[in-house]
Amino acid sequence: MIYRYLDALQQIGANPDNIALAPLSQLTSRDASWLFLRAPTDLEKAEQADLATLCQASETAQTLYQLVQDFLHMVHHREGERLDEWLEQALASHIPEVQRFVRSIHKDKAAVLAGLTLTYSNGVGDRKSKQVEAH
Image (cartoon, rainbow, N blue to C red; front, side, top):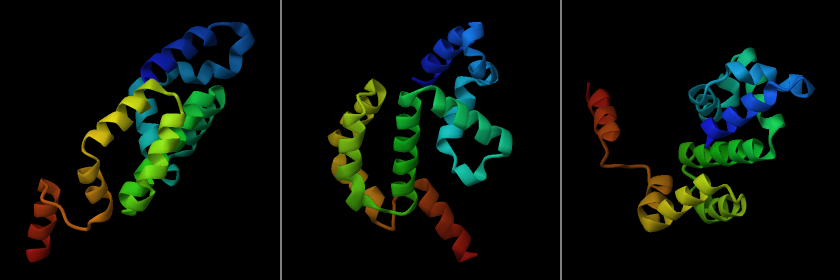
């Protein structure tokens, strides 16, 4: 979705009336995805400027950024009790890719909720952290 959005912005950016969007022409979809997935405090000044330009250029981009950051916050802070509220907001966004993500969460909601609330896991990362603690 971000790739398609940036491609459209690049086409618009070629128009002299939209010169403010020109900085986005150097931003790849991978770069934009990385900006959306990182904490704002971890971004360098130029990255913060790119992110701000991207979010100001589109209400959809701003909504997507907020949803991504909110979901990551739930994951990092184990706030599974907020999942239903987030799912409602995500559905209300009317962003097709986000709605597909919501549908995939609903297919295994119990596991997602457990991952957002429980402090243990049977995943590989959990085993690695236990191995480090043992040494």
